[in-house]
Length: 107
Picture 1: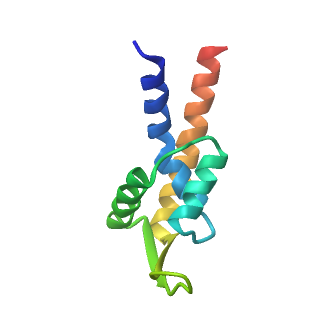
Picture 2 (picture 1 turned 120 degrees about the vertical axis):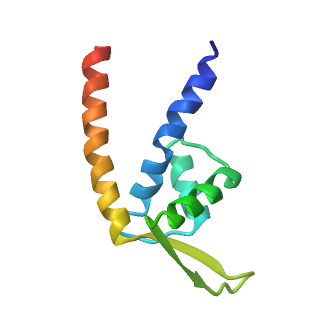
């Protein structure tokens, strides 16, 4: 069994939660999201992020707005919807329960 595969699967499992958390209370451009994830050592590529953002938008958790750019094409800024905020609240609770269970199990 390859430990790198397991680590990658663990990261993928929390990626959606992390993205929604980054967007909690603010809007962000995808490169800003990538930067925050990178700073947290959750390194992903644009090819992973964009489909995930689209899926989250299509399920009603995110919305976006276009903003003209002075140095290129318009930029798409993402934000949580009201439904997304409720979903994130549920994920916060689930994460705490999961963290507590894993912590108890692995001590």
